[in-house]
Amino acid sequence: MNARIGNDNVVTQALGQIGNCGLFLLQVLAAIPRSLRHGRETVRQLWFTGAMSLTIIMTCGLFVGMVLELQLYHVLSMFGSTSMSGTVVAIATYRELGPVVTALLFAGRAGTAITAEIGLMRATDQIAAMELMAVDPLAYVAAPRFLAGLVAMPLLCCVFCALAVFGGHLVGVSWLGIDNGTFWSNMTATVDVWQDIVSGVIWKSLAFGAVVSLIAVFQGYTAPPTSEGVAYATTRTVVASSIAILALDFVLTAFLM
Amino acid sequence: MNAAASPDDTLIRIRGLTTVLNGKKVFDALDMDIPRGKVTAIMGPSGTGKTTLLKHITGQMRGDAGQILVDGRNVPELNREALYALREKIGYLFQNSALLTDFDVFENVAFPLRQHTKLPEVLIRNLVLTKLQAVGLRGAAQLMPSELSGGMARRVALARAIVFDPMLILYDEPFVGLDPIALNQVLKLIRTLNETLGITSVLVAHELEAIKQVADHIYLIANGKVVAQGDPRTIADDGSPWTRQFFGGEADGPVPFQYPAGDYAEALGFPRGTTA
Image (cartoon, rainbow over all chains, first blue to last red; front, side, top):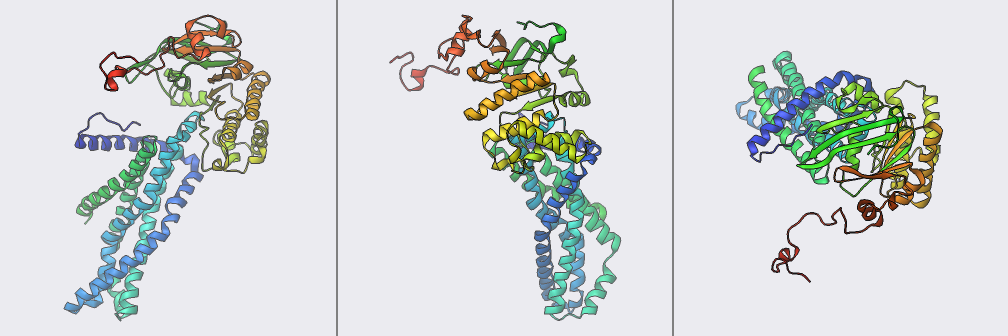
């Protein structure tokens, strides 16, 4: 997979990258059946990308919920609707903040690590060594990381949302004195499982997980085998993932809502 | 330019290999025969495509023209499955060892066995320890690659390359960075593998004294062609300008020491053609 193109035009380069990334996706998808025999590697990657990201996801989820509740309480108190603040925290988190912030954190924490790891594997001939040992690196390296990201993102998003709601409850009920029953009953009465949970949390985080994992693996796989090349590839993972997440979020919201 | 070998005795037969990289002709209708069960060394000035030739043999690179027959199969025409089946019979020792950094020494050597066989754990353990004992590193089985010296990493990579008892081993600069003790052991190991198991070995190296001890035949390549070949002990005396310059270490000869450049005096700010 050679991502280099001759034209220096930025737009042409970007389009070339997107085209190469699309072709790489087809190769990874074709390698998934072959990667099933490397189940242990997929589980190892799931641990690395998913379980190891839990701390940052939980911490950020908690504080996002807390600050959101704090802001909403003061705005809604002007209209005498503070009892609805928990509901707004839940809907905002499920529909937008949960999937988007989780994906951005996932790109920063796991995506960069995947790119750097694969880039260094290529720079130190580990990928070439696998090919020469008749082990397909697409099936052993790329596909397990792609699958792990795809599975980990929705789970991490669920954890993020749960902690955000808990953070909102902590501030709203325990600190600002909103009635506990009102907080939960308004939330359960308003939140729609299909529109908010399935369309928001599950579909969006699945799509973001696929995009971030693909970008991270692709950038690592095509990084020039130099220290500068790996550094640039890692940066490109964060930049491209962030843009892709926010652009895709708009498209998905327009179609799903 | 063929080694004296009948078709059945030839494991690798290269005919008319032509490769152009970035506008430069790396191989120009190169012909070469690697005899089965022998140790063959490929030597030549830096940048002549020795490692590139190994990449052609293993199918990592494809030339623009020509045939590379390995055990009767034309490598450039093989599909992915056939190429991987062939690679299972080939061991490759990288210049920089290329050990998998996530695994310890034992798991690095066991990696090909775990990927391609369903052998019981006891058998895998015995096979791995046997190979590590052969390279003198059984005691380092639990070390991580980052804890190894360059020479130790090279020996671990060698143990990994031979763990499947391949029909062919390709060594890319196997002697670089080895201390005299390790160098001697690696030389002995290459010879032993060749004599006891009949493994064909192809070495890319620059150390003529080491090559003399282990190789049966030498190819000297330059300018994309085989410019000399023969017995390692006598090739330096064949009288050709190529061997005289290469083995004598002379700056002047058919291989230019300087990379092509403009006028030296002009580059230093003096009138063109000025000499000291």
